Length: 485
Image (cartoon, rainbow, N blue to C red; front, side):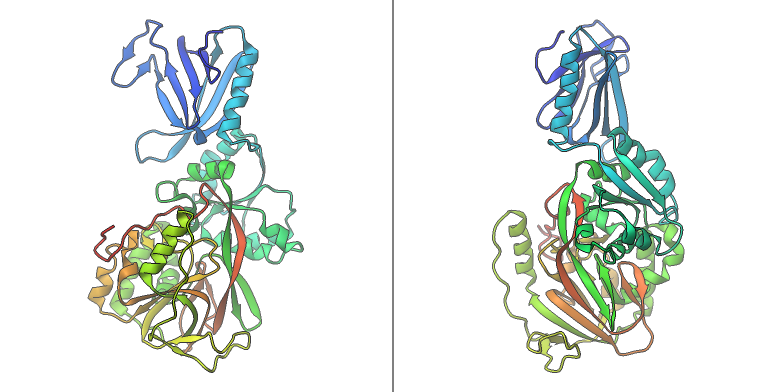
């Protein structure tokens, strides 16, 4: 067989001799220049066979049968476009078929870093979420990738609200991952179902892999980053190649009722926007921008009594701690709270220590608490959030002018609003809020809940998601409101 390296194999594709090879980082398709075929020097194409180089991580399958090598991989048709599954196949040139078989096995071994490509997956598809394309995107884009890798699929299409809770509560524990084809709302249901599972602790260890087809896809953006966070093929690749990432979850308690929150809790103007734009979910993330502009006109205040167990509120230090953690360095401990928060010596919660609770004293428009940098494609709400620091990030927006609120839209996508003085930002170990009016909106992970007093505590490292990185993907580099880095 005509090969020059154990990492490459020579095949014939439509009469073109073509080298397939791989390195530690890339998979390469290279048509040979020695065949005398017509060649375009601008595109590197020989009779339809194009020179291609993709990250090794993008290789999905490699098989050899009946003298033919077949490779399936993901590639972008142009810079900035979404990934697509493509296949290349050709007849091995030469008689050393055993070498070709071992070459395919070696390619898969390095492409999956020794992991088994064939996974046992529970797939939940919400056909009605977001723009209503969940079923079509799963069938046309996601499922072919999972099947190409040899995965076993147990697929359920949800039919009603709470359906995912029922499924997660009763599921067996033999799955390698839970694939959620929807938005953040279905993840919320799954986690609350798992919380009711007979073997709760073991069930929480099964990693969740979001496929972004909802109107809110914040978790996918935080796991995969802006380029891939809304790409269903990139999310499917994460199902195959991602590693478990432990994340904090939150215990949201109202009276004797408790639910799990994984992403955010909002009260005030932002919560109003979330619920009042439900009817225009088909607009995707743009619904939130339109809702924000309408809410600025009304500029309704949020009368609540807010108390926080503050761990840090120095914005520069919180950013430095984030960067130190991502670099594998030990951060400095936070300092004490400042005068914006006054001692609350008479807390309402019997489960809280009197000394630690401090109360926010200024008029506010909204409270937004949670984790994960992005809450939507255009809003980096928690830029210094970490997946498993045992804390919750809390943003309290003081009452400011309509002009200032409009100005705040510029830079929301890169976290510049973090630096606005009226955006009071805290790292906390718990917080609680008591509404001072009878009417209002309270939203947990995008789902409306009763407008009543509540408390949020941290469930450190209880959640498990699949991720390409050992931390949230988005980087926060902006060091002031002007956008300087």
